[in-house]
Length: 319
Length: 315
Image 1 (cartoon, each protein chain N blue to C red):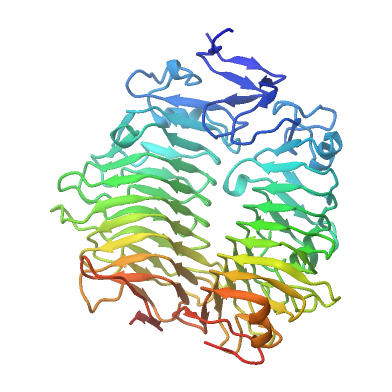
Image 2 (image 1 turned 45 degrees about the vertical axis):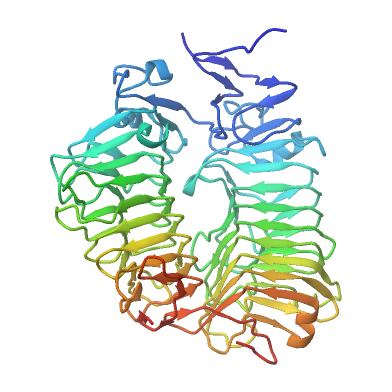
């Protein structure tokens, strides 16, 4: 006797059964640039469609639909994620995780234009120097889970990996791994233009030249256009800056007094220049009034250093 | 009301094999069981398991993330350098069972006997297997020349006086290795050829070692790296481990050819060494190690003190 196959899928208590820990009452689609075709219906892994963009067109908004990008899938064009409530999950591990390749021009990107989107286990890459940004978030409740930025060549780095517009609230970035190491850029890895209740946690962020690892337009997290960052949570991240740039090279940059609130807790910050700060903003007195800083450790300088509790901030630094 | 519908030979849904647990794959699934399997079988069902992991790997397709389930109590003896080669990318090898029921690999006859991930095989995943020494001075027990290897929740046991020079070795060709939840309780001198190191990272490139529990007597450090890092920034991360050196006073030794290329973030580790004057963490002076919230003790019952470091050594 052999395996019993249900190529059209099975459901139990009305829920599609496909294995794994994801539960949904919506539809499931498979995508594979290697074996797929947009002439397929994408409803099983034997007949996947070939692009995530096409799969998004098959989804229904706000139904909890899931798109599984199969191991080795490569999305070579821009993507606008415009179906609310869709989850995009990359299958596979290591170098076989699905890749978003932003290679057309410096404005290539994934744009999140609908609410309640989750993207998990994807790798974002470029071969374009000074790509503007990899992900542009313009809608509420976007989650980026266990994803990675990995440049095709180490010299191909974006100006920012993720930018978040002031109209987007309740962003969650959890488990992001990003190493951007060109001496020509970028400015930031996560660029916050405003919004409230953003959470950035459990991430490992290394910037090789950057003025900031987390920051916002022009530097201040408070946002240069006046939009505040309210109820911000930055927790349990490792943020390192290797830079020859002596100014504005803080790990978290741009906390502007009077315009924000939140908690910055349990982060480990490494800087190779002794003149750099852990956090940069207005004055420490003002920032500490608006934001709670707890249990952040800070290593300064080249060589072996142990972290000390510090929240360096210009114009005064405390160690 | 009817009872549960059973599919003893397994089911697929939408082309994806359905197994219990939280695992999803679009690749093929194969089963291995040394007790009732045969390498003449198809391996596609538990009742038609193949007998060896090597056979199951040959059934896999590179790049498909095929899964090989090693059944509880599966046991293999590897007696050659090619006895357990993994040559295809994306293969996931998952041991089923707990404790002594975990699939077990014993290495004997030649010091080169090991589980080897070839340089052509990237993104290999090895999980929940028990590794045992069956010969003294084994070169290494798991060796990966393939990038992006994951070694998850595996354990090594020293048997009698049989010791390995290295347990896990990641070669300089391999980048982005992840070692998660590795256990080795080797705190007593087994009487064989003393180990060099437990985890060797040659030319480390974005490697991660986490959630491990390691107690060992070694000539060198428990976790060591060697020079070969590139000029590109390739940070590695060692975190949330318990590491106890019972002989060398050295838990982590980090050495790379380039300051930025091989820098290390060391965080939230518990490091135990036998003496009060030793250095649990050491670099070669040109390497950046950023140390956060690592604690060290040298005497049982002592409260951990946070490591303070200056260039080159701990203090």
